[in-house]
Every structure is written in structure tokens, then in C-alpha cells.
Length: 456
Image 1 (cartoon, rainbow, N blue to C red):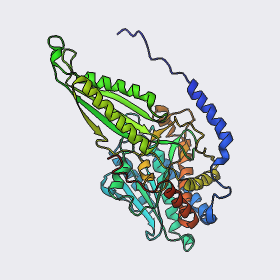
Image 2: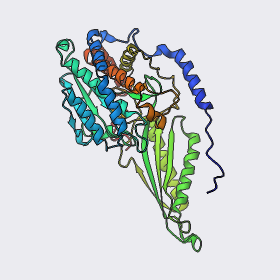
Image 3: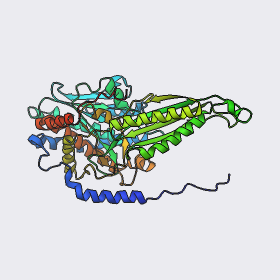
Image 4: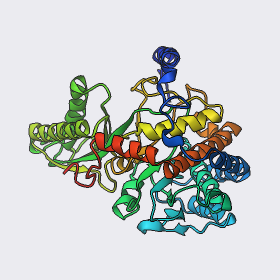
């Protein structure tokens, strides 16, 4: 085989600019994140000695968290197939005297554990553990799992000890093992099956190349266009055919033309999965798979309508039929709505660990992905900060990030995140003023959204 050309290496110029701009914004805005300063701890938060106790407990759990990081990384499992991973996490919980329900809320690889009194406020900690097909834990969900389990075990140890009696108001912590974030919306499946009933707030953390308190997470929908035409001999009677591949390529070009009018943080990615069988036959069937993403729920809804128009227009131009299928086998993911009052407690906890999370607006909005935690954050107040496990220029969903998710830095991130999530949850349970601030902010943002019917 004669190879005339090879892929050209991409220029790093734009990425270099982003790194430099991030450093400049970090210096200018470092004080913009609530931390230990004025207004960061309404009513004093949880008693300092109890916060210190959960942080010590997280440190003492390091061997268990390192085991989780390693075992899940060595045996990655994709969405809804996390049989070994979920069993590993339930096993670690049982080792510490915690009984977890495996197969919770109708999902075989989901699990749930609780500690505390459901009569009081309830905060959930979400733990992900699915991997990417073919590339393993290139999104670091093994670190998320370790962080969530570690936070829950640290809280369980303190809340069931005599030290907490009478010092933390009645309340509950729920650990939700949430499968199938990659390419699916496992948390939406769980939510529709009742997982968030009685939950007042939810928190989790995600590994990254930097410590970030609040970063843009785009809403995401899955879309399939199936074009159907009429087959014909491509040489003898092409005029008797209607070419589905022509419709697919016209629609693909339509996406490219739409991009000029899309808001800067909208995204559309597409692939033509089926485009015919033989060059000598006019293509009867062509299939296009797409992802559509946007920063806000209403702009995602508008983008969805524009894509519908493109598909219908391409079908009209080619005399073909198009079937438009949104979110088949999955559910839409809304953008993440971040709660700043909870974020302030996370930042204070991370600063005690020697980390300094970047505030919102420091990283460019172009560095944006999606997560099904967005659907949680539009039902109850929530946070989804980032913790550093790699160098800043290592991107998620790459082999380099998969390697970083198994390093000592990943274990350290899991321990620091477990301490941070536990301290944030404890502050929420113990501090009525903080809870009021959290829910007032959530109401000001628009309150809960009917996620199930939003795109109807």
C-alpha cells in the first residue's frame, strides 16, 4: 500500500494561549471563590473538631481508596456493564460495616447506602465508575468512585460515633453509586426511578488537569437521523432512485453551515454510520449519529429544533424520508447548575488540603464537556468541581489521562476529594444558615425543572 500523506500534527498555539490566559485570569480572580474569608461559613458551619475528624478519617482510608483506584482501573467496564466495579465498591463498604443495596432503583449495577436520620436534611454523594470502551478510565471515574466511597465512609465513621451525638442536627447522607455516565444518562434513569426522592442536595467531584471550583458543563442530547430512499442501478437507471446517502451528506453539510450562526459554546458532532453497500446501487438507507451540546437548557432546546429543520430540509431536497430519533436508549443531559454556597464550602475544605481551586471564569468556556449530573443539579442544589490528577494540558478521554488516573497523584486526589466532599456534606447538615443560603440560591436560579418533559 502506497501512503502518500500522513495526518499532520496539530498546532499547539491555541492551547498555549489558553494555558497562558488561564494563568493570567487565575492571578486576577483567585480571591473570587468563597473560601475561608468573610461570608464563607454562615453560622460557623459544622463544629471544627468534627470537620477535622472526618478529614482524618479520609486520610486513614487511603489504603482502601488506593485499592479502589487500582482495581477499577485494571478492570474497566463500560456503561451498564459495571458488574465487577460495583461489586468492588460494595465490598469495600461492607469491610467497614456498611450494608449497601446493590441493584438499587432498578439498575443492576447501581447501589445505595445511607447513614443518619431521614427526618432531617439529606445530602447525596454521587459516585461514578463506568469506563470508556476501548480506552478504559480515560475520564477517571475510578477516582470519582474512590472519592465518593471515601467521603461516605468518613462521614459514617463520625456520624455513628459518640462524638457527633447532639452536635449535628438530625440528618442523612446517601451514597448513590451511579452507573453509565459515558454516552448515557445513568443518573437520569435513577432519578426517574425515585433515587432523588427525599434528597435535598447532591455533590460529587470529577478528576481533571487542574483544581477547579466551577467550570462550564454543557447540556447534551443524542440524535439519530435515518434517511430512507429508493434503490436503483447507479449506472443504468439512477433516475429511478432516491439517494439516502445524498440526504445524509447534505444534512452533514447543513450542520457545517449552521455552525456560523450557533452560539460560541454550542457543539454538534456527527458521524455517518451507514452510507450504502455498493457504489453500483443508489443508497437506500443512510444513518447519521449526532451529539448536540449547549450551555443552557433553553439554548439546547433551540439547537435541537434547528437540527430537526436541517434533517427535514435534506430529506425534502433529495426526495427521501427521514426518521428523527432523539435520545434513543438514553436521556438528555442538562447543563450543570452550580450552587455557589456549596462551592464555597468545597473550596474552604480543599484549601485546608493545600489545593486552591480555580474560580468560575478562569478556564475558557471552550474547555467544556457534558455530564448527566446536570440533570441532578436542576432537580436539587448541587456541585460538580474538578480535582487535579494530571498536567493541565492532558485532555479527558485520552490515553494520557487514562494513565494519569492510576498514578499516586490520582490516589492523593481521591483522598483530598473524599475529605472535601465529607466536610462539605457535614457543613450542610450542621449549618442551618448554610442550608438556607443554598436553597435560596437554588430558588433564585429558577428552582427545580421538570427534566422529564423539558424537551417535549
